[in-house]
Image (tube, rainbow, N blue to C red):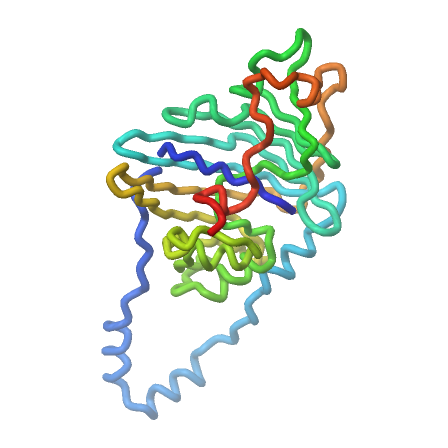
Length: 291
């Protein structure tokens, strides 16, 4: 699966600093107990712990044609005091044997983001259909959708793609703290680019992404939150947060292409159209170019 990341240099909330849980009080308490008493307490009172569920295997078990998951998301950016928001208000992701193969999503923008994203996107087969915002300007009469020869699934502004097995495994294994099914940690854009097998500008590679990953008792992702800041020097900085939620794992989902009489192919619009010639680059190098 290829995921479209919407990297607008418009503006999120304050960067959430995720910290490790302090251990001083716990260690101090342990020193008060004798080793014999401690061993007795551990052997007599400690309940048997079930082996943790492997989230990658749990995810792969969900990959069945005709099934999927619901997704919603809020992406915020803040640049020089100006805030922009893109919300995925109603989203469905359809699965195949290898992962996400279809998507139907509705977007709503506010502030600096207004008009930059489509209001709705549908990906089916080898095409992505979009409408709304700048994607609806100058369309022929009766046409409501533009068809791109691109099977990329446009579903998120989240830099951490939990449907990528390598990324999901890293979020769990590299977490600095775990509490109640929530894994918290920090990765850099360099770390993430290597997981995706992409190159990224070395100036961006050191930027840290703080994250929190929520798993339910079955090991399935219920949410992922991330935050990072891009510093442009005298041009200011942009802070971005992405909060993505997944519900209804295993739901029956059927995603269909829009009616053909409402669709126009991009190449039919001509070279003078103001409609974007391609859906934004689906890789991390859209942050600043390959370097």
